[in-house]
Length: 206
Image (tube, rainbow, N blue to C red; front, side, top):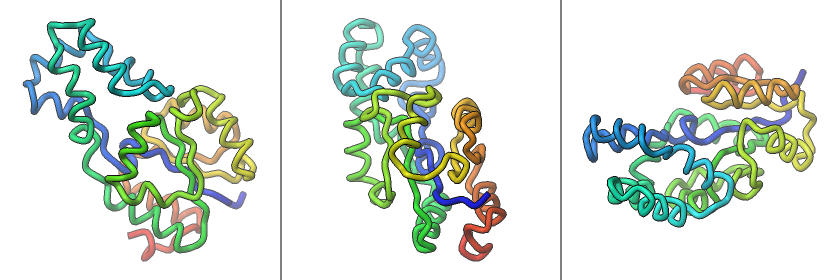
């Protein structure tokens, strides 16, 4: 089946997202492990991905857990130190697809405010043909509603979408709807898949 559009996740596909790495460097691994055991920071971030404002969520959590007040605030204050660096090969693949005239969509668990700020810092985030951002849609991957929302809006049949994501649960949810999928474990594997699908030449996929 022909691929009519390529759908990119963003975190750990186009931009590395690793809060644990940041905190290990900022406060030490032992302190980080204790904090993550006591405070569900990723669960709090899911609330941001559903549309709440990052500062509101994290600053309130900082008051709820005063033993970690300064560290929890870092999730907001040092957000870009966790969402870095860009994955250059993946960015080249995105741009190569666009040069070929192949539509590229973003399907991402991302807060409304953080995504707006990220687009100011990472210029390639402004280069998608269509955007499906969880904070705007009030639903997150792998919930079916976010996939349905993309399908109903984009005008491309599910079986003609090719989606890459680093999380297998997100991939499985898309595959269950008939999407073509690629579990992202590095840009070279993704490049190879795009070549195998006939979307890029080996030279274009470098």
